[in-house]
Image (cartoon, rainbow, N blue to C red; front, side, top):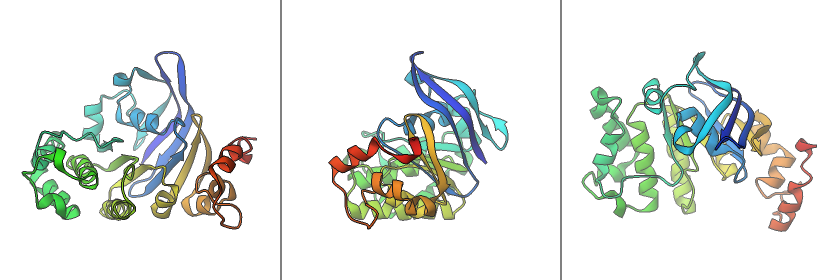
Length: 261
């Protein structure tokens, strides 16, 4: 199990971003992490992945555990070897390299099983199988997201951290990405899903956490969060009777949320 206990993160020695975050991702489950922009969702993933140094951040309190062993002081490369891979927001593919070159870079910690991992990725993403020599920068947005996820899978991770995988994609592609995440999980990979499309995330997750200003303010089964009136109104844009709220209403509601009172 992947566990965060009372994690505090500070950027540039002065900016407190995470304020005692605690959460867990059980083996083989999908956990959703929700929150507005700036709530600290990406910082949670960076802390798990060992990427705080390059962002001038420090984990100043708490600990991150994998199967009971602390990993928060490990290097990013070591964390990948331990079985945790991250797909960053914005895809971050190497645009001038081919599809297959991008994928093989993801296997640098698991070279012995590269062929097996390639076959797994190509079975999940048939459009990539059809164009292994295609220059990655010319792929569509949806195909680039497939490539980014596929590259992370090349290290055969136990846990996959996904940062806004549906960002900027058309609704049909969002549905495809959702189905792919479900299939990846069905194959045994645990998923921590950061996603502003709360409906999509909660529809496939077993559990969910809501972040506000660096704190976990809600922690429930995903089905319970979908049914929660506060979450429905603020994150799903729905009122008590299912009507769509205006953006102005949502902004006003931010100031009166009952979980912060």
